[in-house]
Length: 107
Image (tube, rainbow, N blue to C red):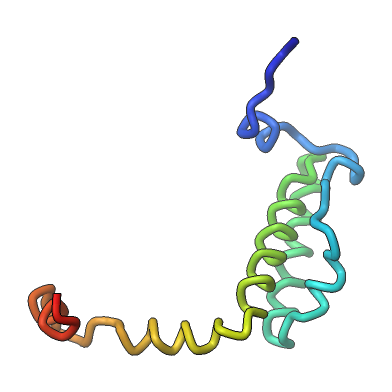
């Protein structure tokens, strides 16, 4: 029996649409894209389709779909906006040193 690594499978050319193995509920999830995200998604899909046509390989298309699928799942979470705000507030201020950050966070 031949073992094939996951990495090798991801590198293998994809020549048939059936080999894309799209995530479940793809259209439902991608339907949640905000208008500005939908524009970027469409541009990336067109570029991926062009690359697929030139290389006879659907990996670029699969990678765009998978990345956006994951992005939508994360950003659709109700806690996402609050978590992003907290992350932005926690960024170092201009000129702030590591020691300043440690003092600010009590570390």
